[in-house]
Amino acid sequence: MKIETFLCEVDKSEMVKTPLTNFSVEPAVAAFFGPIKTNHLVAYACQKPGCRIHYEPLGMGYFLLDAKNKIDSYPTSAPRCALNDHGYTGLSSMDGKLKWICPEHTCTFSKDY
Image: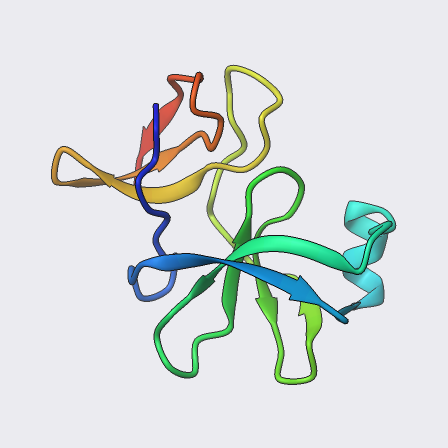
């Protein structure tokens, strides 16, 4: 499935692909995800003013980026793809319904929100 837009899990507004640079990672996040070997990451950012929610489909899913550019965990309800190891699903609208959809465009996994 091709996802046109990812939505913020908190306020359901559209997210925009955004390069992140010069960020740091909370120790608990690094312990869970393992070391992030780059200081450049492409994620989707919520566009609502004041919202710090971001989404990175392959390894992190939804996360917070605080005002000091530090990545912190977020208690997301996004499931991982149940068909393949494609990472975390993203929230999107499909046929007028909110669904968790696998970010891999060749995968058909989706789950009702």
